[in-house]
Length: 73
Image (cartoon, rainbow, N blue to C red; front, side, top):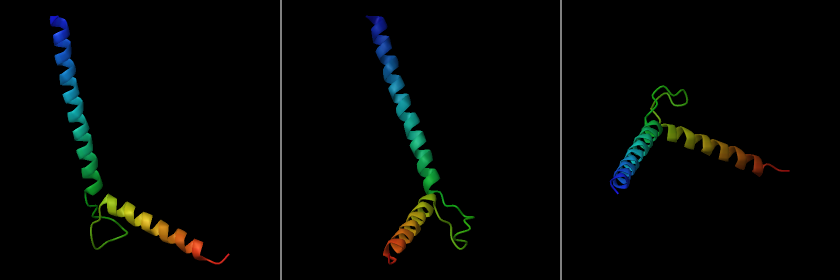
């Protein structure tokens, strides 16, 4: 009975460690996505985040697609 009780405690500690690791990875990803990039050649006057750069790329791609669709046959 004591061995099973110790095993349960060890498993509960491992679940807590996994949650901490998940939190650290998520925090690192959020920091990387929202950290401003200062030496961006596309916008020399201000710093942009990775999220802003990706969203601008999607906007440009959508504008290009909608322009090509609007051209006559």
